[in-house]
Length: 233
Image (cartoon, rainbow, N blue to C red; front, top):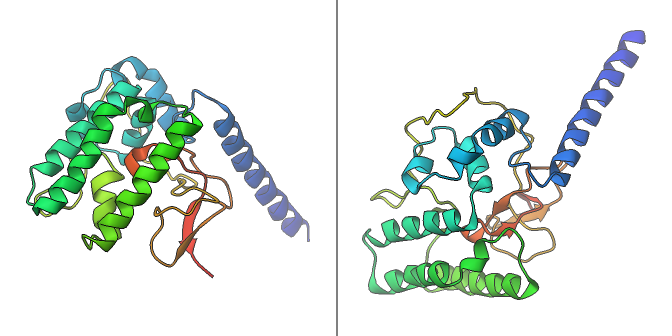
């Protein structure tokens, strides 16, 4: 009986620590990842991170370090990163209609710098929501693109290869510290109470059970994602 109580108490304490850690992460403006080791790596190397080019960022071997570094980027860095991504994409084999559709994203990135700001006005949010909704609908209905291709095009800055698939990071960048991969509680992947296209068909945007890393995601990684995609009822 004592062992059972002790185990239950231990689980409760661990759960409380996890929830507390995530809660404090969400309140701290200078947190780039809810994983303390990843967050420390970015903070210790913040000057170098904010001097990274697209090539430097792509050279980071750990995807989680990439995401945390991206979270620390300045708006100008994010804009440059995405301009490079879309220009690379346009060099691949597309139909004329597909090229024009992709080019419209490049124009948005070049001439609407404010979309990469940390905080958006209601006008900017409406502009992003309208553009992305129409862009997603045309992609699916007129061009026949599936969810995987759409994600590869406009939801990750990672490089696309000639097969129009995402290339995984292949080299490692070492700054002041290094770390081993660790397990995260989960990353937010969609927006609660928003009829977006961020989840797969048949999935819903649901509240995370233990919270999640509330970073930017979705179209050009400019949305504040607050939920996780799960299979619908």
